[in-house]
Image (tube, rainbow, N blue to C red; front, side, top):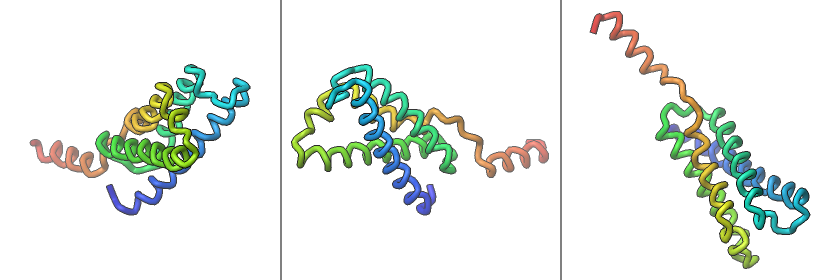
Length: 137
């Protein structure tokens, strides 16, 4: 993967963090609770939405293989975990964030989202296949 894509990948990772926090805020308004992660369905809804956000952001990156997509998804999931830890440890709220199984679905969804996108074959491999067909091999 070209190094010039990493700023874009990191920027999308930050946007995924902001989207996660906004979704949790909206869910706290909907549930009327200060801790919306206490409701398992909230974590599932947030995980599904974040998977689609991850999928959508990955469409904006020129990735050619599932391996590259998995790498980007893992980077995004690790960014999300790291930022949450940076916020949760000083506030002593790690048990709230990481104590619910449904929050782990969010991390998995963010990591798996880019893999779900159907990739177009690389242009160079298409050219190679066409050359082989023309030459009769």
